[in-house]
Image 1 (cartoon, rainbow, N blue to C red):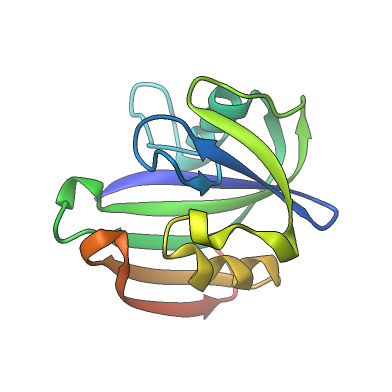
Image 2 (cartoon, one colour; image 1 turned 180 degrees about the vertical axis):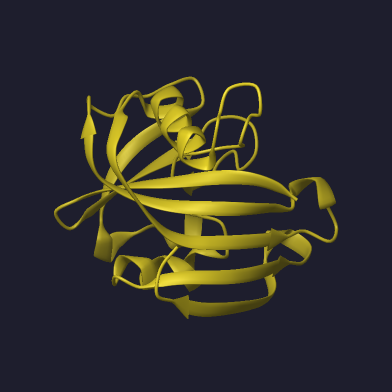
Length: 156
């Protein structure tokens, strides 16, 4: 499976999500990130930094890996991927809209789970509570979770 990144900017009790305007996940609120690109990235951390700059115009200074998620889409295998999730609490620049994503701050208690990928409601609260996780998610029809398994880990 391909490797991808997902970065979540955190400030005070707020989280930055972006409305996907095109491509994979269009019409959903999500963190910023994308595919590891062998021609541009030397490692997954480099991919996370590059994607954050491209999608919202900020340069991360502090990335903390908090999750490794495996997403399986039996009905659309090309969507299956391994996702490395990072929390970012220090960065340079101000989040700006790009042609791919419109960023918006949300209070942690008001995260719009109904307008996000179905898996987010299962794992995101755990990482926001300070836990690190390793998890598998299988998607069924209608991009809904058919099954999942979450393990808590001490670190990456």
